[in-house]
View: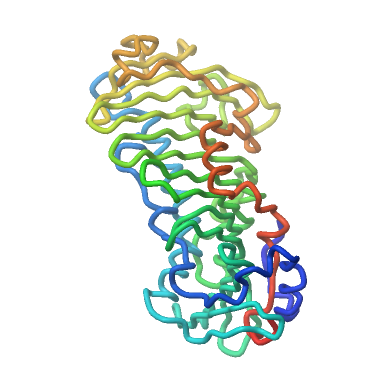
Length: 372
C-alpha cells in the first residue's frame, strides 16, 4: 500500500462506491461520537503479556515480545492518538447529510501546530468510513489513516484501519519510519479482544542497515485471564560475532501468558542479513508470575554462556500450564506471517473479514463533506 495522500475527489465519489441497495439502509442516520472506536482497545498493552538470561533472571523472549508490542503500539499511536486528541469526547465540529443522502460528521483540531481533521461518513446503519488527515497551515492535506468500522454497540465492533507511517513521520516526526501498517481488529466482546497487524514495506529511518519488513502480528487478550501473541521480531538477537550466524536475525514468536501464573515462548529463529538466509533452529523459554525464567533450551552449544539450557521447557508445569507450540520455519522471516486460528474466527464474528484492503484504503478529500 502506498502512503495515503488525499486525492481531492469529492465525497460524492465515496457515496457512489459505498452505496448499493443494501448499503443505503440507515445511511442517513446521524454520525455521532458512538461511531468512533474505543482507542484503548486497539493500543492497550497487557503488563503480563509482553519479556532471563539464567533461571531466576527476567525472561529473554518475554522481553523481546514486550519490545515488539511496544514498537507496534508506538506505530499505531502515531495515528490513533491523533484521533483521540481530535475527537476528545466532544461533539463534532460539523455534521450533516450530503447530496446523496449519506450522513457525515467531522472533528477539527490543531495538533503540534498542524491542522487535523477526522472525517466519518456513514455507509449504512452499522458501517462507517474513517479518514484522518493533517496539513501544515494552508498546505495540502496528507492522509494519516483510512478505514472502515462496523459498529455492534457504541465504540465497539470490528474494523480495518490503514495507517501511513511515512506521512505521520513527515508531519509529526514520529514514529520515524516509512511504509504503512494495516490493523484488523475485533473489540466487540468483553471476554476477548483481538487485533492483527500487517506491516507493509516498513523501514525504521534510524536503522538503514535493517531490511524493510512485511510481517504480521496477532494478539488475543482475555481481560483478567491472559492471552497470546504471534509475531516476528527482526533484530540482532544472538549476541556477539561468533554465534550461529553473525548479523541480523528474524524471530517468529508464539508467546502465551496467564495472569498470576506466568507463560512461555516458542521461537523459530533464522539468520536474514547479510544473506544468505539460513534457518538456525528453535528456542523455548518459560517464566513465572514475576516474569522470571523457570526453563530455557536452544540448540546452540556456543550460545550457552549467555543463555544456558536449564530447566525443562517441555514440562507444562514449569510453563504456567502451557505446552510447546512451535512456529513454522517460514514464519521466521522479515515477511513472515503466523495467523492465529482463534483470531481468524473472532474477526469473522465481528465482520472485520468482510472489509477488503481496497475498501479500507479509499482516500477522499476531507475538505468537501458536502459532496457526500
